[in-house]
Length: 312
View 1 (cartoon, rainbow, N blue to C red):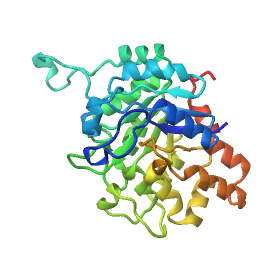
View 2: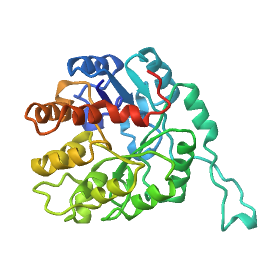
View 3: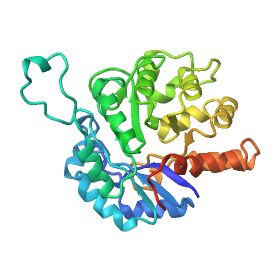
View 4: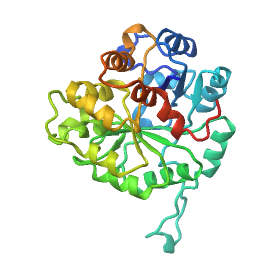
């Protein structure tokens, strides 16, 4: 079974992209059919202000509740995730004794509601916060208590960008993986994938670095050391990481065959917006560079392994 682990439905166009076609349920299903993909994980994206393009405010699916209820009509093809911003929760007026140790948000009502709606995970988390912020750790820990994996978008530090941020070397991601050791954490985005290479600058965490990989990056070490960390190869960031140096990419796919998830992150309904990950994996399979076993794990087996709440 092939599962696209990273899909969206809604109007994700920015004001200068209004010539593009938004992603609807129909054109998502049509794409799955065209590419011979059995199922897709649907990720809501409208909870954090950093991700919101202008058109999203006018989209039919800026309301997660409506998105999930409409998505339930496609339960034979779609696997549902909920989404949350770690900053959710009003602390109100603190008592003097609480100033140094303020209360943390209890996400259990949200997570319980998402489970009632058929959700089996949380993501894509895009809040502009440090990856090891106490609020992030709190959310991830509680998701783990509910048996829900969490998928995040990673970037470099700075205001005005979307995604959890980290410095070169991924020290904050490592602390998050340690603190939320009971939670399956799925990384994605430029800041996450730049760390496949050990020779990067901070600028590389916002872009798609090119060229051969001559030194292992922090991502390689973290995938080896933390069993709860997984890697989503969707979007330009993921595809660039596994294809910029083909020999290294093949080595990476084979070593981490149990921890890599195929996804696309298609944000437009037109054919120009489609992603090449699956065709590339099929090419590697046809050329004998990865085995059928490796292909099957990456394109679906690993997803089913970590989606413990999902009942096909």
